[in-house]
Length: 55
Image 1: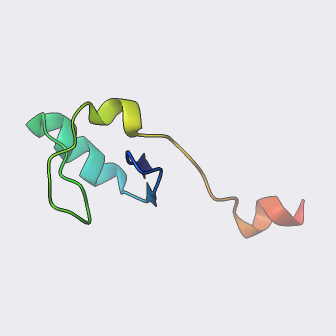
Image 2: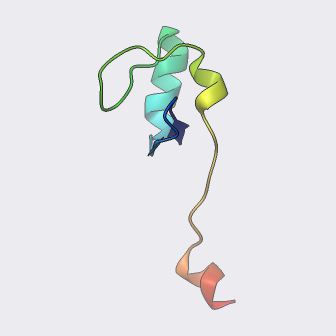
C-alpha cells in the first residue's frame, strides 16, 4: 500500500512495486507523477481469507 503525503492510501500490486523498484522510479497510481523516496511510503498489509476469519 502506498500512503502518500496527504495520508491517502492506495493499494498497489506486488508487480507494480517490483516494476518500480527495477526502474528506480515509482509513478503515483492516480496523479501519474513520480513519488520521491517511495520506499518510505510503501506499507505491507494483508486481507484475511475466509478460512482465517472462520477460525
